[in-house]
Length: 66
Image (tube, rainbow, N blue to C red; front, side):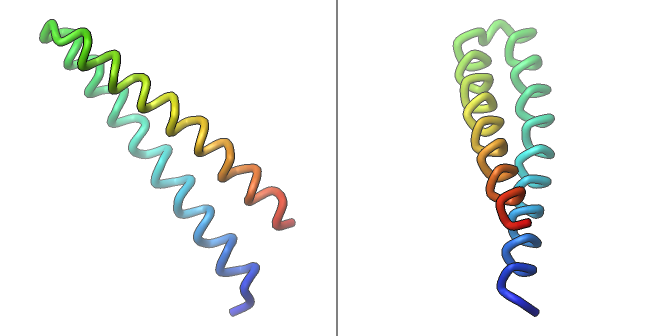
């Protein structure tokens, strides 16, 4: 397998992984808010935002392979 193909597979995996976890983080933040843990929920949402930004970087890297 060529290096570029391995890189594409790895990047796609990381993107899928991040996107899957983002859904979990948002749901957990909602649960924290319902439990009155507003500061904890805020921190989880901040982390989720950073992961979304890192996922955008991964997508740019994937696009640049083509």
